[in-house]
Length: 449
View 1 (cartoon, rainbow, N blue to C red):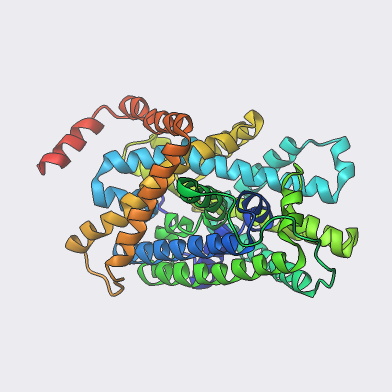
View 2 (view 1 turned 90 degrees about the horizontal axis):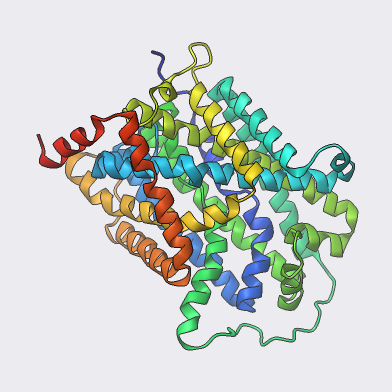
């Protein structure tokens, strides 16, 4: 049977890191965050803290990748750390909701951007049809070869970075006087015990915009010199995104007051970056930003499709998923069945239209797995060598933060967390049907036999 081969260099790996992170979040999340906190400084602090936490995560997983860079990313890391139980639950969660719903969600925003730029298309095409078409098109491109998928990622990541730089320039260039601020600037409308939940709630928007940093790890077996290039790509890519995000948010607050940003947040369907440019510079510039938002979300959808399909390939090779998912196309060298199944399920989620709610339910699960991976690094240190080692307080800090975020999420939304837990563990009956020997192998691992 054909195997996946290393074809992705350092530049493409960096573009995958940045392309996976930068989607629609940076263009829209500042508005709901400002509405919640009513303070420029607190919003900027949320972006900075979320960026530093993501950098801690990046350094942690850079060391993990330098020790065990395999196809499947976090799935493979968790398998090395804790065995098949934990890794399977993570992989199943990715297929059922986490990754496929992310693909559906970003593709949906892309489709909205398309109709925003070309409104006449709405006469013949709906948002959902455009979103599904983009998922199928990008899945086909990635089916043709990882080089094609990486090329698309390189092009659209460069375009989205140029788009964000344009937003930054336009924001700082704005000469319109801000409206009078009716709220007390740089203060929180919360007291006592409500402060921390409010900050965490607002920070979730920033974490959404930073999410995806680890996607390049899913391609571990296809990156040239993965133990060197994946850590480098992670660190360089996340630092670049952190700087870009802080600059663009500073530009937002330079152009608009807290009150104006909050007003935009209260109007459904508006994307803040587009609305800001529209109000200051007119429809022409707003169209340009919308086009660049299209490029951003198209590239982010591509990145998720490219990387996520490798998880299910790795699961099938471990005999905890349908064996057909490990099939590699003999000519194109891509996990063809995994790409097809992922495209079908993500398209169904678009039709159901409930992917945003489902990803909210599973955000606590995502960070639970991230935290387990951070603490699992100490297990890997006992069994592997690495030329790249971070101070122990970094993975410890990140791991504790992940579980704190999980606790706050459960406390604030217990019903959603319960549904999320049910969705995570719903994969256990499936794995029993796929391989009855699975539980026996897990038992042997636990006893060391």
